[in-house]
Image (tube, helix red, strand yellow):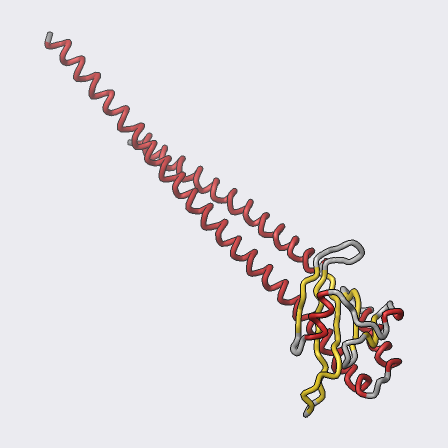
Length: 224
């Protein structure tokens, strides 16, 4: 009887020891997985923040470039607007329209009629009826309007800059520049690809670290 009790006690002790070892391994594995989850979360969150800021920066740079082009055209066109020199206005508008990403240039006179429309001489003297044109003609400060892709028109920004003469509150005209967004989307796509590659690298690094920690924990348990 005493032998049987002793065997039972030994069996229970062995069972407790095995359970304890498995529990320690489970805790070690759980800690490794927790570290992996935290690392992945922080990595992805950081990369998303970087991507968002990069995208905002690219968009702002494109807007600033369009404003710069339109403002420059407004400056060089002021004298011609005041003197109704349509030949010079057309030359300036066509020259600007040749710049990279510029889809069109439009110069409106003080009555909001088309003085120059690059590539569309037939529109001279017209009042453009579409909503984007109406908002641009009424603008008293710089105005950037997003124009989505439609049949016959690429997605772009319409940047309007009113023309004023120093000392005169009246608006003498409006300069408009259509700026294609194709390059902006290309830069954003490249940024997202870079972020994706960094994400994959971060995940791979986290997996390697987690595997190393798990193996170290298992070795420590085996030594015990």
